[in-house]
Length: 188
Image (cartoon, rainbow, N blue to C red; front, side, top):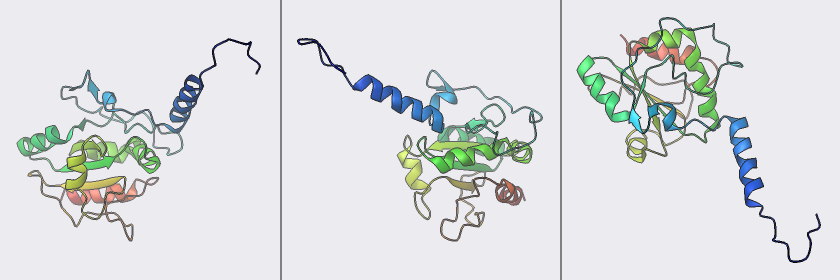
């Protein structure tokens, strides 16, 4: 492109920013804490719908952790709710930039996962935003996503793990069966 003499030089910042935003939208990186909160404050307790809208299909399920079907809680709020309700906790560590996390988020549309989630206090923790929780639940590393099951007092039930040979709390991202099996065991 030729610019006339004396004309201001075009900035590459805006096209670069638009490209990055487009890439993030394409990859599903737009999930933010605001998706679970209104104006930075935790939403009031909302029960999950009685039944999922459609059967689970990994390829067409959104990568947004199913905020309408799962009653996600923040870390501290969720632990307090578990103590008062006596429900076990399913805690997921994730990050906005994490591709495997986006895939794993899809299984929370599986009807059996949605149904079982009603019997848990479901906690979703962004590892970048809550460094303390990320380190607290780094039993075998800080890889992502990690899924932990806690009793109502917040004690980690270490025996409830996935089937990955190296990363114990890394559950299958595409098939909800391992997660469902662990959820069922956590309810016993």
